[in-house]
Length: 232
Image (cartoon, rainbow, N blue to C red; front, side):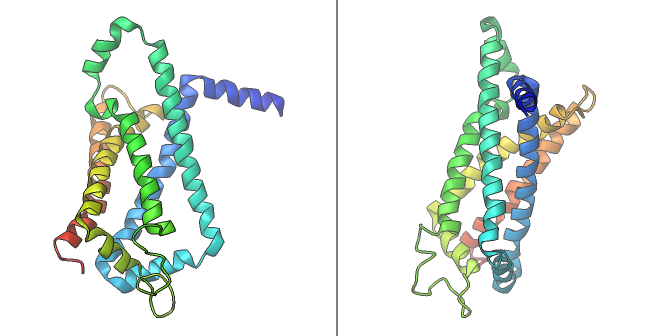
């Protein structure tokens, strides 16, 4: 057991180990984003479809907190490993090459830590907004956001929330930063996992950009549709 513990510590102490942890946790988070987007886009199928999907999730009861806590754990591990890796890289980088490296770096790569921390703040706000319901009285007891069977009217919650322009603005700004994070992160993921070669690097760069546009465009379509009056 001690030998395994020491092996894990040595693995994490190396930059390769941190990069692998960042990459593997990113895979889990990307899978969540795809699933979350698929569920959210049910809003375009009408209230019944979205509310039925939400009711199935909430029907899991306390077991719903298993994936929730797993997601928060992935976010925590991803952020911790990324910050440690950034600090390790700064400590190992010769001072005379700092300016040149910055010039070569893409805007997305230079903003990874900032965009990641901003996304974390948004996740906390998003959980308080829709999951915990501490904002806008979504989990009130007067039945405004509840259906006849007592379940939450998630369709109405989303339309009301995104109908407030500053909520939608904050959401869209967060999505812009998420897009920047995904664009660089997805392309880096292929490199960390050993798929990238000098020949295929441009391809994976475009894969990262297209994935970011697809995910963020999908999420952004909801507040835009609400503000435009297509969803009421």
